[in-house]
Length: 184
Image (cartoon, rainbow, N blue to C red; front, top):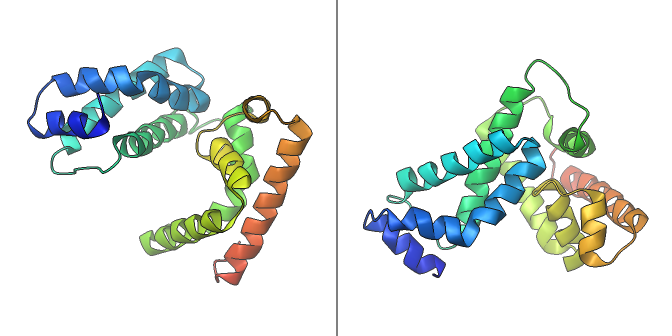
């Protein structure tokens, strides 16, 4: 079933919307969560919470892309769960490595909503300005939390090529944000 029909099911409050969403995006949601959480139990809970969040937010929301809307929900829930699980300890897993790679861009010390929006908009503009392959690698690493090895395999690239592309993209992002007046 396509996204538009699933959204319509949510809008008319049909419980079939949840089962159709699971059929269409269950594996996708599980992959996003498991990349972040590394726990089957936490992943399952997060995915179920995401379906509940869809039920609670559609309506009034009417997303144009159910997949994009759901991926934002699932990622935020997984990151919240990750933060809760690691509040008192600093892990050394793959998720921590990803955070370490990009934390300088987002640890300006300000929690102001307007600053967060400015950073988000600047990053989106930056991503729109770079080569498609660089953008895809960046998003897979820092949005979906894929490992360098997974990314290299998906694209038929060497791991060193992926690492270097990501480093150069981060360096370019740092310069871009500085030009935009966003301190890094």
